[in-house]
Image (tube, rainbow, N blue to C red; front, side, top):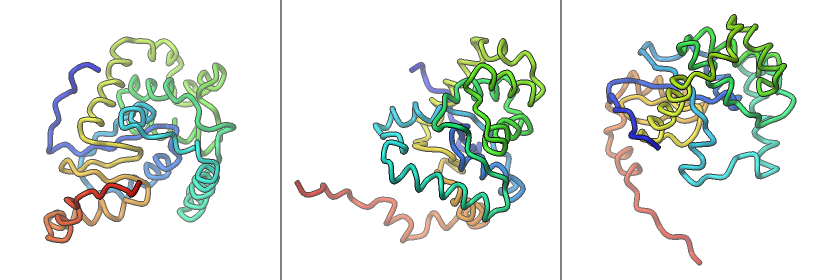
Length: 216
């Protein structure tokens, strides 16, 4: 990788991948987010898994089934329309680069998510991506995503995420602290209101627990 971009500790981030149904569900709750200026950044989460040596979650059949059922349950519980695409995981690289090419505009990002997780479409096929570009109002999207600065920006997002310690999506980063998962929103809201909680004695103790080697 190239040198990582500098990290501004004051900048809050939201990292996502279009492969993540929980990223979709969390962005659909944007009106509930803390009123702070999150930079919303697409990343290829497979590169995160590779960096940290983590297996893909779908490799465990029972976990795969649970994950899809839980995503559907959360969508129904939250009143958010939800429909799985025809296969998963899919190649999200074109959709991610399209989000970068759009300038990271939240309306475009939301519509890409809805194309996939509300309409149940696959953005990785040639026809699916053409339909997605028309859906978000970027008919030249196929050309836009091939620009070198678009590809470089997406890689820079991954490098920034790794430098911050991000290990999955969706992830909020506030004051360089990580909050992973759709169901972490209440914690993000709590910490935004009560930032000193992270300095509490018990929080500090469990954040620095020694690691015990497993028995052979």
